[in-house]
Image: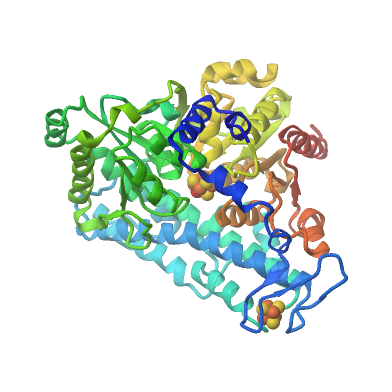
Length: 621
Ligand code: BF8
Ligand code: SF4
């Protein structure tokens, strides 16, 4: 594959060429070394859940039809999928747990670097839990809220409070199906129990637990992470920034924050403005300190501070290959262990900060709330002191950078609409806006970098579908210039008119992947206003280039919440016709939505448009 075949993004293409010249290997090369990938793994029909195995089922029906214990392809595929959902829900929810623990320490005065940035949200979250404000300090309210949120993890019986935000009809459906999540940790543990050898061996029964676990993520872990991060760091509001590798600055100390938790990146952004460190940077020959993000921790600081983003998931290696990164600072999730070897080829310091996550070749600088700012300063200082080690002959920063407008939290969208969803509902009812497309998710070497994201989103807006985006899709859209109000020119006439009158882009950046919970909140606000269920809305979801287990959990909760979702790559379920049929058709009769798999973004857009048209008809629009 040439650089051109690997990515549609010119900045990435030039760094892929540099990688080749520098004799550096990237994920794309390692992907080629993996080919052909294992067919049993792709189909999901190998099991090693006990040590009589590994067992695998012959997909052609000529060899083994059962594992040693008798498990069929249906059972093995369903169990494997359930474990993916459990891992994804665990990742989002454990992130949420840490955010709440920081919030709790803050309320007790044990995390001095953090405070309450959105007081109104603190009070409204507290009131949802029935916590009264009377005679209490903000910190006392925060402490009570922290305890209530922490209890969501260990609860044995539901409901998880924020599921109550869903429309009545949806709640009733979940309850009738027995998939109302009980407690966040309980659902994840139960997945591990059920998939242990000799426990749950009915594919449909297994998958229902998958839906329940997904819901505990979307309306539990992810929603808690979003809300409490808003209280701690502020609820995002529209602002401008820049994206792509060209945001790196040749004569500044470049620090990348990569991973997922704003607990870290917020402090790094602050420490980079410390006068003491700026002075040190000058002494070391740099003109300043430049912090840029990658992946979702980048989305978090982008949304709240307008800190630039250097790239998506598949650009993490390319950023190092510019030769201009003094420190790659990581916490958890989506961090390639390949960065260890790679940073060793340049002067880049690879700094791991989470007590939970380490990688080969890192300098460990563990982050704890009690001395968060001090650690952040230490990290920036390490980067600054590394600046003289940079080999300028090896530096090549692509020119490409794009302006973007970000910060569209559900609150910000409602505010832009004048306080209620009515103008949007009016535009949808009148047909100017056909519906809403939620496009999210990762990059995946199996799909040309950003090709799926950008083409799908362009096709939707061209057809007057307003797009809301999070995660790496949002970064890809920003790189393609779709997150500026001027991108309305690419939209159909109806959507264009709406964007121009509101001064917003046709693609709204709603945040990181845990912020898909913001999309649930927005969808519920619209559905509740109309008195219908989410599954009645002219809306559809897509993850054109997904790769992570978190995306599988997201798929589970988005579909269980009633939103038809198109996946750009097939999950490892095709070894079971029963499971594949359930996911792509059967779920419609259960939760009123299902999945489709379509790698071609133009065809994927058509599937979404047809779905949206169908929902419009059903609503009489
Ligand atoms: O949580 S979209 S590659 S960065 S998993 Fe990872 Fe996927 Fe990017 Fe954010 Ni989300
Ligand atoms: Fe094989 Fe059954 Fe053990 Fe899986 S659980 S490895 S199918 S014997």
